[in-house]
Length: 125
Image 1 (cartoon, one colour):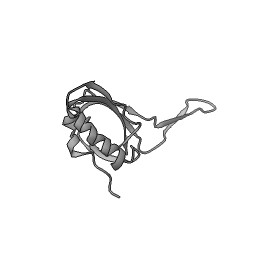
Image 2 (spheres, helix red, strand yellow):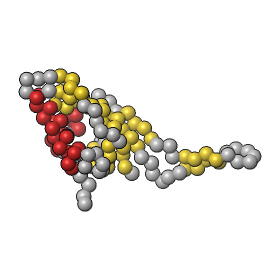
Image 3 (cartoon, helix red, strand yellow):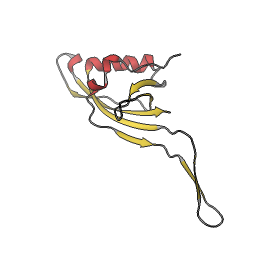
Image 4 (cartoon, helix red, strand yellow):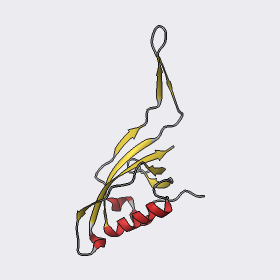
């Protein structure tokens, strides 16, 4: 099965990013020795990076996101391709947890309301 792709209708430029945070899972193991300096070695050849992407989208875009999240990537359990906002490269991502959306600006038309959430993602090596 091919890897799902982030919806075209939710282009990175539409998400109005306010910044990203990056994390890296620990990839070294330190072992004490009987004498002298402790040993330290790499655990894995590749590690998982994380991104926290604060974003703001419209109500119409939120409906597109919800359909993608629930149906296409099975409630956030599947990987998907997206452009990494830090370096512009296409990578495989997966949600670490479900986004908690909060309405930032109401509107008479629900499609025009603004919603905000942090997308907590991991980059799959």
